[in-house]
Length: 168
Image (tube, rainbow, N blue to C red; front, side, top):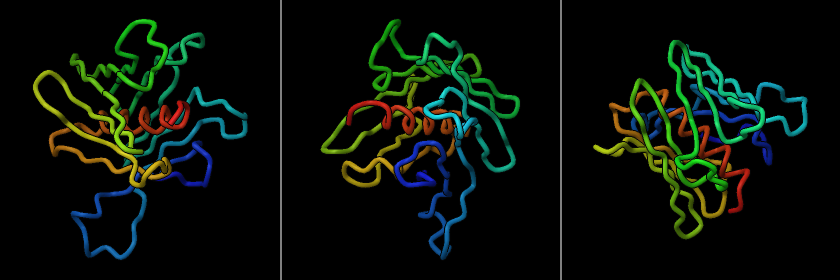
């Protein structure tokens, strides 16, 4: 996933796994995450998602709670919130509710890299991290084959959004 424009978090492009298709000479984005109201300065409360043939949205659930989100993609609904009530640093630990199951998204920091890990009590589903040292415009996502794309997209959104809105 990469920023579409330098120094702007308002639009991101999602690219396919190039390691599985090394014969590709170029990359075409297979999806985007972009702010819904791009001309309203600093209004990041609603986002649009396009991934393959699916479209959806991510929006703040409540006006007075900037850390609670809901995501709709096709027929799917996900609820995203900090893991702990009244958690002030929302970038570290997240709870993602999807299809009557809870998933955890946890952040670790290591030598200039931010690593987000998506898991539940039984297994780890995906990891996302910045591609270059202290550079947060490009991210790599490693995903298990069985991970639903809705979970991956929610993880991409949270990692992108909170990496840019919290101290590095």
